[in-house]
Length: 290
Image (tube, rainbow, N blue to C red; front, side, top):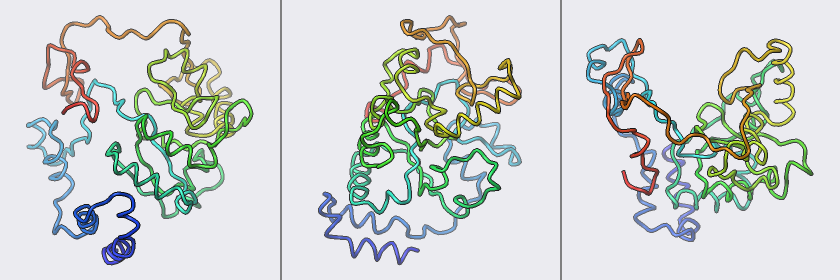
């Protein structure tokens, strides 16, 4: 695999330089898959890289720490956990879009998909076709989402009023706290996060529809109605989640609290570290400090 990658970099040198990469960039790119020697076991790796792991957990080697560690601050740095179609990778625009994405430095984690994910099914699962046909997943912010969506045939030039079946294309396991689908009026445009929840629900594709697609979500909602007609089983942004949001009222930015916040929760509902200032007031987004 290393030899194949390095061969690709060597053969594509002129093309990559055309995207603005320097010789130094190409050298770094060439070494990406170079073996780095023996790697530690997962427990050692997690405790050494996860800086929020409390000290007492390092003395319990049978308790593998969570990564990321549970916190009370919502994860809202990215607005689309995008599933990139395999056939899209072979289009003329894909290389340009991906290179602009890398150069912008606005991405976070990525997951390579493959194996039997496209075929392993008995026909009764809720896994969307967009998920099965995806090559990999990337997390995108509002600046790069239009660039990706505008280059994909399933979104370009389409909207929810003329094209009734949204195809999906969002990876559900890593969604941000305020993630939504695109504007109903233009599937290449981001749903503004400064809108109220009432406005977003009225004018944007729902998170659920952006994950499962219009047709599969309708089937899942019908199953939900049959098994739970009174909606007693609720979880935020799950299939059948019902919450009334006002078009005018904003969510409270400040809630009444005891004046103390837990930033390191522990097993059993305890807390190993309390702070006297709301952590959300000091959280910085990428490009705005550390």
